[in-house]
Length: 260
Image 1 (cartoon, rainbow, N blue to C red):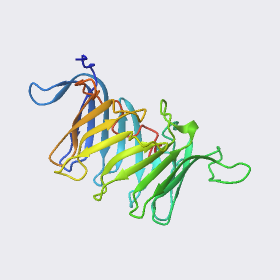
Image 2 (cartoon, helix red, strand yellow):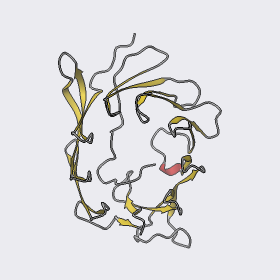
Image 3 (cartoon, rainbow, N blue to C red):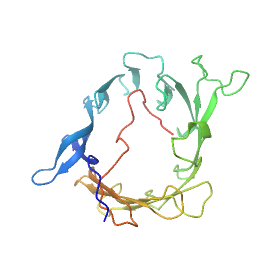
Image 4 (spheres, rainbow, N blue to C red):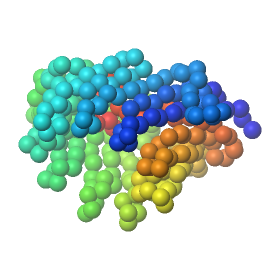
């Protein structure tokens, strides 16, 4: 059996309204109440009475946000240069999650579903066509029940190490995500097993980066309200018991509403 790596356990805390307030990463101590020792990473949120983030702490890097009476973000770190909404409340201008200095424009259909995201060319104006057209970053398709079933991200904007650009999503009759397939492959890349106790409570996620055979598994331990409390990860084929969750539970400072 492979020795589990250290420093990758995660612990989450919530308030009495089941709102996420913080996470810690490190080594989990279960001898009494769950606690993190030798902390390696942490995030924290300060929320207003309506649940809007007023302050986000990403391991020491802070981001503040202002909101209006209808809970729209009006400023990020006291600047409104990268923030705008349409009449329906959809965020149509936002910082890029890949580089906060860049600006993204989002397009929605008549049902307020995001259909495409564009990288601004630097002038702050959305221009999908023309000599100085902005660059298409990603596009999305939906089924008749408004579920997103296709995501296509342009190659230059793919996360590091991700070779595929087209992802198909499959759901059951309860709108629970069951699996994803990439670039038309007949083999699933990711499969999800959901808890019967709560519609959005995940039990286990199987994942294969190459869409060939599953090589990674993440187990989720949920609270009574369905919130993630602990994550445990390991190679399915190697019988590892490795607690890990390398992706942060929230978007990074400088991002606001979208990430590919």
